[in-house]
Length: 239
Image (cartoon, rainbow, N blue to C red; front, side, top):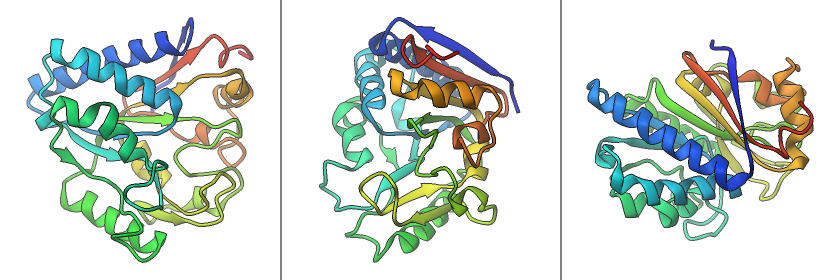
């Protein structure tokens, strides 16, 4: 696992612009090396900023988005047209605009009977598509230190034998979700944390300070080659 690198940006806009530029460079380099990169997206307001920056910057880049395979770290188990879905947010912000065609959305209530069934289907899809290693996993961090839909003190943090799990009774609404587990999140060349806001500063400081992952799940994931914390000044204020 790589030691983390911390980048502190003036604000959320600067953070998103930097992360978008670095992602495009990394994807172009991977494609030049003959790889078809797999990436895992996240949701939330900072991810939405990043996605809009990708839409803005992609036309001037060397990335062929039809050769990028897109996954999600987690998803809300709701209807396919719900505004709560991370996939809908990403499609509207950039995926459709840049011509991404290999997009693997997590199941919705229309395609799975419950979160566990949806998680099993997504795990099977990952295996069938050769998603054994991600180029980049992007993760937001909650004020409680959660990542994806893996929350502090939950038994889901200790699941080692499944790629994805159903989550019920989430402490953050909506209560039903699907999430990758820690092992596939760790099978990434790079893990990037995207964190904005003073309410996240305590979790950031604890994660970087070596907290137990059961208390701060963000402390439990690092990239094989690279781990970057993209922070704004507010989220970095407790460092």
